[in-house]
Image (cartoon, rainbow over all chains, first blue to last red; front, side, top):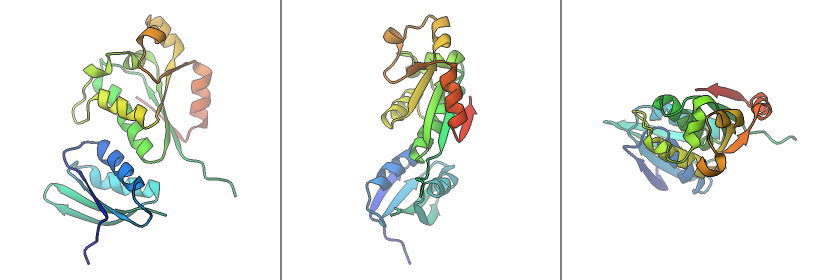
Length: 78
Length: 125
């Protein structure tokens, strides 16, 4: 079943560390349980988002790769 | 129950504009740390002290990263602290009042020792 997002953040073209910083700001603005869809083209973004969610307690509910795009669905923790 | 203390990183910066990567990557790490809810202090020593002078960061670019000026502005906006070695500044004839950007604090060795021994980890560039 496709994950439904509450907000989309496009970080295409941005390089480290900006995708992670923008993701944090976007997630902080969501309510607990809401889902952010973040799109990045930085090749290191997959391990970065995995590490960041481990560190911050938010949940990476789904990941997709489409060409050079990495698409993350991150649920804000309580 | 005791409140969980956030992790804290000290990142020592010892290179200035003569080494764009070693000048830039500390700020990359600093911004990433702040985004990860990790407290961070950048400590400037040796040539690193040049980076907090007016007009310096504007000329530093490392391949693969945002410009240093952008990273520095972001780091400061997000609440990152900057401590600068007093003797290193004096020996380079830098006048903090006239030459520093807004944000850095002059400190000496005891402050660096306290910060490093209290931190989760220390990185040196």
